Length: 105
Ligand SMILES: [Zn+2]
Ligand SMILES: [Zn+2]
Image (cartoon, rainbow, N blue to C red; front, side, top):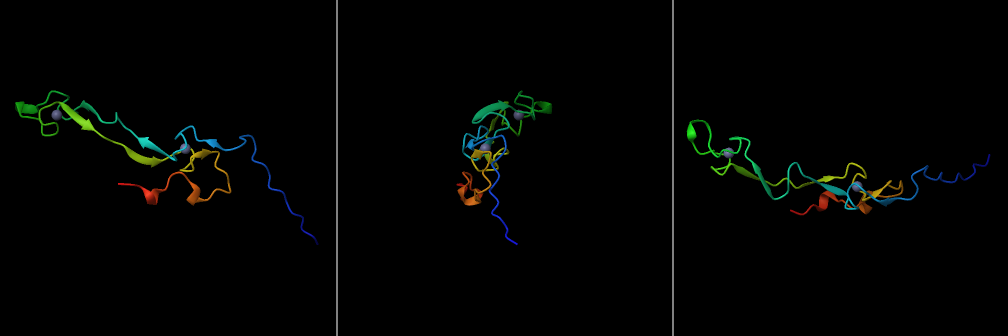
């Protein structure tokens, strides 16, 4: 019996992989909860700068504001780090735009 070569079925619908719209091809997104390098109101003292009894707020040191920097890189939920979407099945992990092992500190 001869097994015929089966042609790889073309990816249905989506067409060719394009730069991922979610991460702009970076493969990761900024995990920004608030604003990057921006101050926001201290939640411990509600922005007053002091807590109960008029003591200086230990969290914001009396400023009423807390500097928020939450810029952790997270793997793009859409392309899973590939940087393109849809991700070609032939794409290997080393070709991905996001390399968790290469994360700079
Ligand atoms: Zn405070
Ligand atoms: Zn992406």
